[in-house]
Image (tube, rainbow, N blue to C red; front, side, top):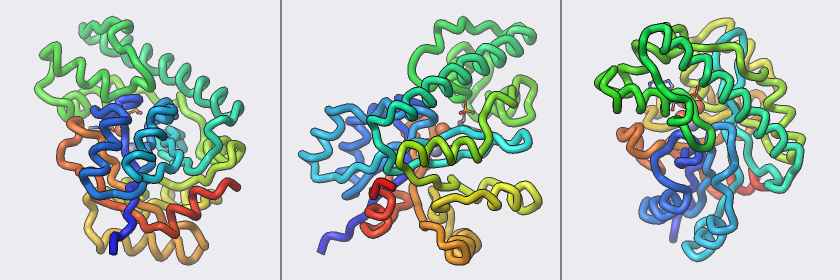
Length: 269
Ligand code: AMP
Ligand code: FE
Ligand code: FE
Ligand code: ZN
């Protein structure tokens, strides 16, 4: 019997992954996945007709996905949207606005870098959903830092010298935008938050699901989130957060869900 496994969290080069969406699908086939959701940051550009044609020929089911960048009291909160209507005009308007917010924030980061005598021409940061990883890659390429990690540590991570916050929408707005397009809103990687009042406030939102199975995290770390999901009747989701060569330690399929979860998220609400 062929076990159905779907990785519900990965990034293509439409945001900060290194594989194009069709390559991602081929890699999903090699990883023996039967389902995939590409969850690029603030863009659904991966979902082209070609993607669906290739998925059909590889017998891989596709679930529409996106990872929305929201912010709560200055802390980034990533919210996954699944099963939305790709043709929703409200969703495309919203994501266009998110790209504009990103451009404004990128410009503010570049200005802070320029104040430190590091000059990056904005035009060099081309593409969809450009963000900090692209700026980090550029800092490596130009020899300002030795690695992406160092770029984050020295300049870009939350609270670092060139970090810019306050450009994002609230988690509640993100949830509403996903629902407006018929999708389900899922709290991404709750494991990243330190236990405390911020986490409590984030968990007070009415999500449809929570990403309990995440990346390379070990089993014991899933338990608190599984308990919360059970208490609240939230859907338990999972995925690798694969980014390709940008995060080479994470394999596609490292975390996954079964068919009933996939179907629950795919049903338009
Ligand atoms: P942005 O959407 O521009 O805020 O960038 C967020 C992305 O940057 C995340 O999805 C990660 O891929 C990457 N990232 C965030 N923090 C770090 C870090 N400390 N080291 C490496 N990559 C990071
Ligand atoms: Fe990312
Ligand atoms: Fe994330
Ligand atoms: Zn992600």
